[in-house]
Image (tube, rainbow, N blue to C red):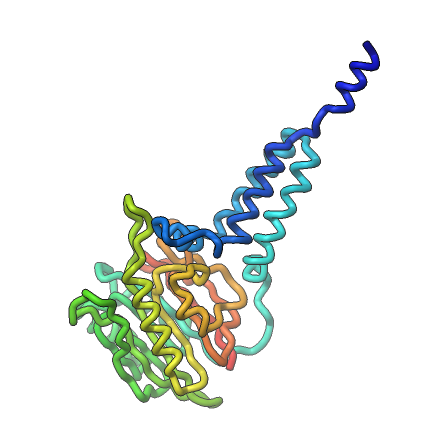
Length: 316
């Protein structure tokens, strides 16, 4: 009987096998998110829009592993933790203490903003060199212009997007990123050239179409088409240095923005979750660059809009 009991004891399996399997499985969507197909309800883009939040499975499983006293599960948790750290850890590192050349602010001010003057004043308080705004309305535009004109005497507006600058603007023109089927009153892009002491920068302001989560899945067709048009415009830009400010209606991990993100670099530091303002879950307000460095990005205090403004430090 002791021999049989010993056999049973020696064949006892380690605790927490299912927890360990869950930990390994959690690493899959993080590491292989590009392999998740988009043909089925836009599942790939939906996953990528909220990709950092998959890391929440690590502390949940950690608590379960500690309660279960499972060494196997604790070791397995190192895998998703390492993948998450590789993808997003650098964004959480302290800012580099080096001088910056520009400070820029990006903000979707909301077309139903009840206090445009207060919003503009709050943005100017950060003392940026450039301010890019989306969802400007004809009724609210005079309030923004009046509040910003003293510190930002140079500005350009096209449709519902605008750019305010401390430095003169040149080469201002509309940017056609209108998807097929959208009417002629849909104008959400502009391009201008800003001179600096170290050369010119082509500044793009863009607001891509919204996405929708429907019964059939993640609907992003117009947004993706607009991103392709924006990507083509960036590819044709002759000025070497490019800065894109805008509400792109997704994160830089979303493959739907690949025509844009493949040509520009994302910030090196900062998560800066900007939407929705009440409980931010994603940074869809972007500051991206070419032949320059977006050294860091952060959110500014909330305004009366449904997005948080973001401020980014630029090095030339």
